Length: 94
Image (cartoon, rainbow, N blue to C red; front, top):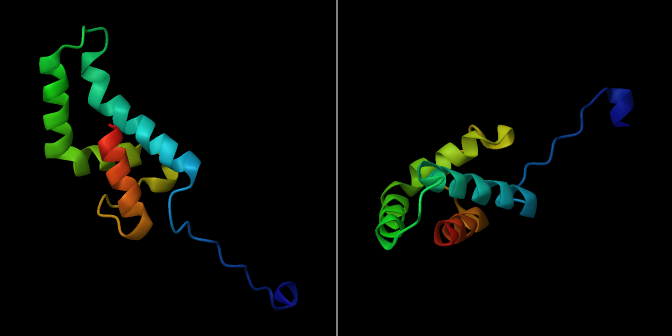
């Protein structure tokens, strides 16, 4: 019937991050927070600096990580529902 009426099927909107998307986001977050320490010996002071940066700037870091994934470029870091839980898991894992 849809073909006869020339109706398009609605695209499914991902209600929560798929495991692959979650992994890509986590990878991007880790890459962003550690990139300036590439090749450096990681000391206790550097780890503390990374933790502080992550806590102080997590939404900006997450938005930057989203920007590296085409399907998430326009997504706001202010997430809700299950994605908010996944956001908190990413923050703790970073």
